[in-house]
Each structure stands twice: as C-alpha cells, then as structure tokens.
Image (tube, rainbow, N blue to C red; front, side):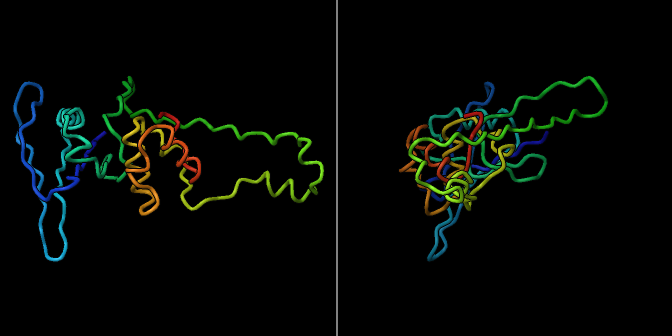
Length: 186
C-alpha cells in the first residue's frame, strides 16, 4: 500500500524547518507563491511513512500546517491522520477485505403522539431524507481522529463547515449527523 500525503500551510506561502525523523534532522520546506491578486499557501508532499508520522506528531501540526490531501496507491481518499495498519497475509495474493453489511434500523412502533396522524404521514416521516452530502460508510472507516474528521467535513462542505465551528468531538458528530455522514471509527 503506497500512501502519499500533502500538507498545506494555514497562513503563509513559504515555511522551512527541520524535523527529527528517526534520529535524523530532515529539512521540511513548504513552497507556495504570492501571485497578484491571489496568494497560494505553501504545500509539502511526502510518501515516507516515518516523515508522515513525524509531521503529524509535530507541535506545528494544525497550527502552522494541516493535512490537505491523502492518496493511497495514486487514488485520492478523504484525509486521515496516521498510517493504516498493515495486515500480514500468508498467501501469494493480497488479502481482500470485504466490508460487513451495516444492519438497517427497524421502524419504531407508533407512539401515542402519532395517534392523530394518518398512515401516509407516518410513512413519510419514517423515511430518512437523502441529503446532499451522503457518503458511504466504508469510505469513512479510515478517519479515526477528531482533526481528520474536522478536515474532511471542512473539505466536503465548503462554506457550511468551518474549523471555528467544529471545535470538539460532539460538535463534529452533530454536524456529521445533520449531513448524513458518519465516522464509525471516531
């Protein structure tokens, strides 16, 4: 599994610093540009797993720079922090993991408050409306941290989800439920 991640500066167009990666100091340089009338914040991409771990463990992470994009085997996936655990296989072919089906919740028994409603109204209320941001649950299994969930929501719902509004786990989960997104491993 080849994982590549792109990090982006939050406020600046350029930043360079050294980072201790397994006992060696590595120069990390974010490169951007200032083109009139638009500024492009600096970006840094790496596929080195030790560098990824060090960048995400740094005190600068989510202060000076944030995770912008993730790629697994060249395919863009929702941003997630960390490195997924490798499962060892004994056969010559790689093991394919099939997601388990998610059981659908059963319809609830009508309560006393529903007595005055017609059957058509009850059925209409029982159906879950499809919202614009519905995401299959198997894509969300990679997101395991609060900051990765926040970054995903901000990218998936630009203009609606803001980092300043999604300050803790409860607010992130509440916003995600409103937009038909779930994070099963959060």
